[in-house]
Length: 221
Image (cartoon, rainbow, N blue to C red; front, side):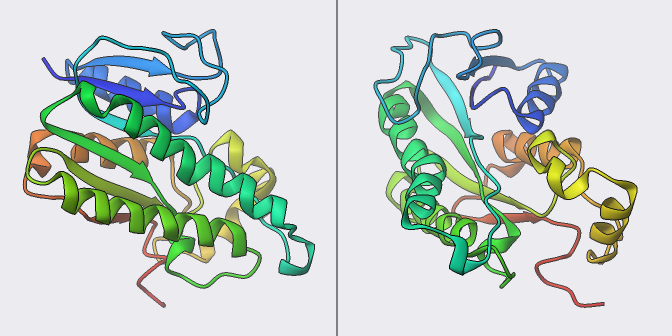
C-alpha cells in the first residue's frame, strides 16, 4: 500500500487531496504547523524538521501565499518571504526527507499559472513560482530514474487562501469569465491532478508542469 507525506496539510487543497488518496486506499502522513492535524510537531518549514522513520512513496509540498500588489508597493522583504515559503521550504523538506523516499516515489510541487503567464500585480508570486518550476525540472533530471518530480500549476481556485479574490458572487463571476472554461477551480480539481501524479498512471511522467487552470495559461477565447 502506497504511503504519501503531505506537507502543509492544513490547506483546503491538501485536505481534499488527503481525502482523495484515502478513498483510493493509500496511507497519508500529514505535516503542518496546525498541530490539530499534524502527525508531528512542527513550527517552521525552514527550520529543523521532525525526524520521521516512515518510508514514503511520494511527497507533496503545499505551503504557499497569494501576495498580489503593484510592483511599486512590493518590498524586498515581500520577495524574500515568498521565496522562503514557496522555494526554500520545499528545498528543506526534500533535503530532509529524500532518504525516506522509496524507489519509484513521486514528488509533486505546486506552482501557478502566473509563473508563465504575464499578469499584473503578480511580480513576487510569479518570480518564486517560476523558480520552483526550474528547481523541479533540475531535480527531476538529477533524481531520474529512481524518483519522479512533477508540478501542478493552478489558476484561481476557490479556497480560503483566495478569499479576498472570491468573497462575493460578483468577484467569482468576474474571475470565471477570465477563464476559457468559465469557472474557477475547486480543490477537487487540484486534488485529482495531484493524485494522478502520485500514482502509477503517471509512471512515465517526470519534469512536467501540469496546468490545471481552466485554460487560462494557453488559450485566448
